[in-house]
Amino acid sequence: MVLTKEEKQNLENGGYRLVGEHEHSAVKICRWTKKSLLDKEICYKQKFYEDIHGIKTHRCLQMTPSLPFCDNKCVFCWRNSEINSPEWRGAVDDPSEILDEAIESQRKLLSGFKGNPKANKRKWEEAQNPNLSAISLDGEPTLYPKISDLIEECYRRDITPFLVSNGQNPQVLTEIKEPAQLYISTVAPDKKTYINVCRPLVSNPWENLIQSLELLPSFDCVKVLRLTLVKDLSLKDPSGFSKLIKKADPDFVEPKGYVAVGHSRERLGTSFMPTHSEIKKFSKKLAELSGYEIVDEFKPSRVVLLS
Image 1: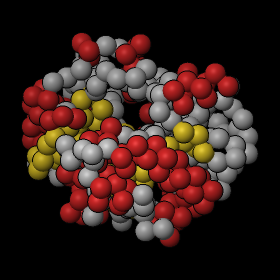
Image 2: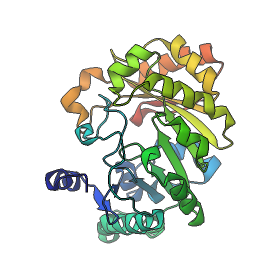
Image 3: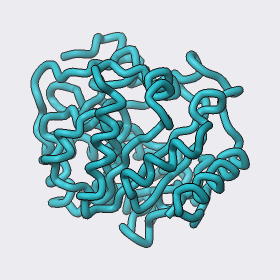
Image 4: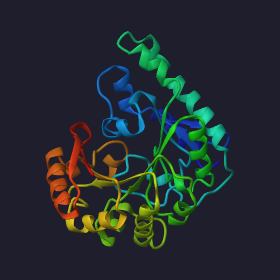
């Protein structure tokens, strides 16, 4: 076990449920899942990609197979990055075990909605069997030695796998079973900014990212660049970002504003949060330079979709 008892308790207090024999995996209910069950709002993933994948916010399994393992300690990360390890240590749980326990833990976390008179009972029933796995909750999933098998297991269960990676392991990307949708977090327009914002724990981090971006055109799945934009840190140089977009040639680009939540509030604050109008203004410039166009937006998450 890598996590201490105190670290585990802090995670559970924050809504995480550790799963698997060796507890390197976890699940956590997204607030948008809760909102959807109450018929309030859906998340931007459903708004942007439902027509492609048929996914629903209330049927999303937000999970990670690599909770304490990550190559970066990004300043904007809402997680406790102090527990991050860039190398895998300890035993490895099988994907079937992880998914079994993740789904069961999610059901327990959602059990209270069954008796909530404001909850949509049809949605609650459907939520018992997720049809989307957002492999992005915490850590870097490409560090999980059986990530390809996990993607395969999702397909076997008719769960659409979305994989979010920081692009620090291009070799893994060359060997991986393709997810339905692959995100590469592209959070800086240049090497200096990347190192300042992502605080990498490995050597050659910028070069690793560039190599991953250059691999994207070889993928047949839906490909997305997610630009996490922090005011006064990475919300700059649309020309630099446009060059990375042209290199990766993704299907979509998501310029998304940083939000001061979780542990990121200890490193940054609300003054680093761009408004949605600032993100949209930046996105318009990005579209002009990259040849993409704005096709959607979601103000509550301060995100714009380029295609």
